Length: 290
Image (cartoon, rainbow, N blue to C red; front, side, top):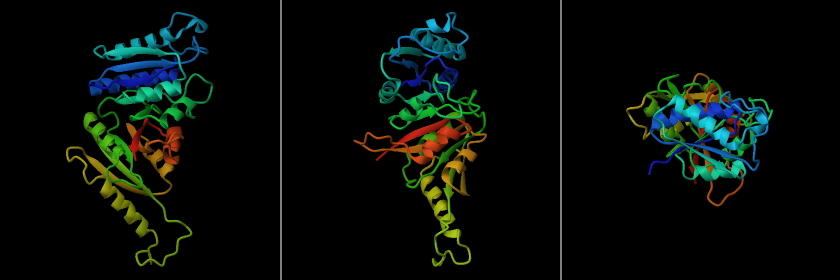
């Protein structure tokens, strides 16, 4: 069974940008696009950014929001199979449930609140902490970034347990679809409180930590496909700013997020949380089930 690409919409400009990205990605993958609007309110309240709507803002119903998004997707890709769904429930719960039967879940940076776009909306943040499929939050200069070769590289952050990483596998699969390179990045630091008694650290205190980062990259890319170009980078510094810097001029930034069976709290680490707020390109959160 072909799992659809699911995009959550609410009529805001960021969500319509997410529709553009999701329709490009669905066409690239050859899967249907499912446009979902979920709300406990009967009507969309606020300022509609969609120019297609011919009604005053206060009369725009949920059906208008999904229909506008669907028309936008079909104009971008006339051959795309686009389906719509309006759900009378909280968007957080609806989108997490949708993630259980989706190939990918896509949202914008924020919803219809007045919060600055530099910050991530609460719905996207909550869903990112619970989604069961890869989730994309469309950030930065995203236009046409699902098209092959726009920037020429996908960045993946390599974590503490790189062997068998779902995020690394996802990055290489996506790079193959687009015909681009994977930049595997591992940040490392030399703790200030650490002594230099270790034999590998005498004379060059940082060398041991950098070597460990190199070994982590080797482990992460040990089973990488040979038909996809890749580059390995070790960078001294905290992981979040290192990855945010690497996201400049990238098509995607891919990071993993642990999913613990039976754990119902927010399952989103500090690194994923940080890049979702500050990345210069779309971010993919890939579940790492433990």
